[in-house]
Image (cartoon, rainbow, N blue to C red; front, side, top):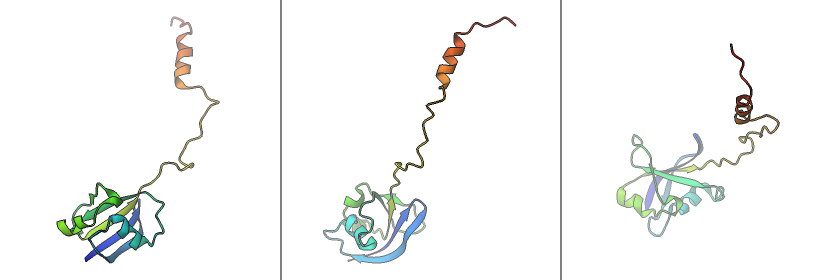
Length: 120
């Protein structure tokens, strides 16, 4: 049985604060731990997984993400797990409206290059 400190973040905002969770390490994956703490609310989101031993250490990314085996925590002695939602760049608010009515800088330069220059 593993006893872990688990939290869920979205960007810098803490969605679920750090909690103690107990789970069997055998035959369980990070996705099972994620479902246990979120109660299945965020299954549609893409998630990155980070682990560390002590609060003073830096977070280390788990390469396999939610597919990773929890046995790694027991073997390496990690106690803290952080799930971070991956931000999607598909927000329509962030996409600039195309400026089709304005000429591009390249076409302006090309037009000016064709003009005759007068001596000064």
